[in-house]
Image (tube, rainbow, N blue to C red; front, side):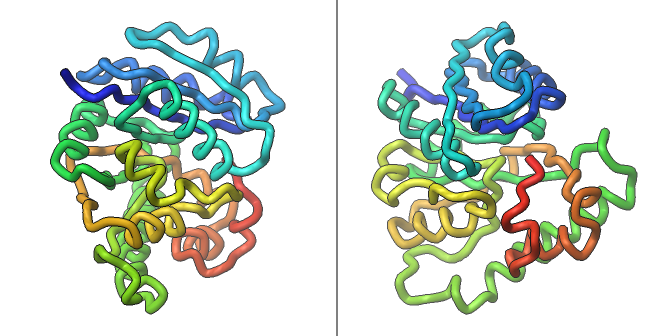
Length: 244
C-alpha cells in the first residue's frame, strides 16, 4: 500500500489562474492523492473556484487568514499531516505541473525518504521566447549563486545546497515536522525552508522527472532587474510585495 499523499496549493487572489492549475492536477497520470487548496484570505473568488472544481480525487479547501505564502503553506502541510498524510507535495496556483509530476514525486520520496526538489520551466502561454530564455537564465544563476553563497556553506548543513523551488517540491511528513516546517512569513521562503531541511538531514534528492511550468509574471511586475533580485534573494522590493 502506498503512503497517503496530499498535494497542497497555496492561493491568494488567483481566481483567474487557479482553474488551469487544478486542471493540470486532474490530468495527472497518478491521481491517488488528496488535493488541499489553502485560500490565503483572498478578496476574489479563489476559494469558490476551488470549491466548485470536480476531480478524480478528494478536494479540500481551507482558509488561512494570516498573510504570507509561508503561512498558507505551513497551515496546509500541517492540516494534511493531521489528516493522515505521510507524503506531501506542493505547487502554486499559477503553475502547471506536467502530467507525470505526482508520479515522479511519489517515486522521488520513496527514493529519498526526505525532500525531493523538481525542475521548473517557464509557462509557454505567458511570455515569448525572450521571456522564457530570461527565466531559464535566472534559474541557472540562482542555482549557481545558491551553491557558492557563503551563508549556504556552513558546517551546520548536512547536505549540499540544491536549487529548490517552492512550487515544485515534495517532502515526507516526518521530515517536515522534524525540520520545523515552512517559515511563516511572506515570500521569499524557499531558501530558508531548504536550509532548515539541510540542517536536519542528508536525504535530499533532485528529480528531473518532477516538472512544473512556472509563471513568469514577475518579469512584468518587477522588470528584469527586480525579477533577478527576487530570484537571487538579494533584497529587492519584491521581497515584500508578493505578486501572487
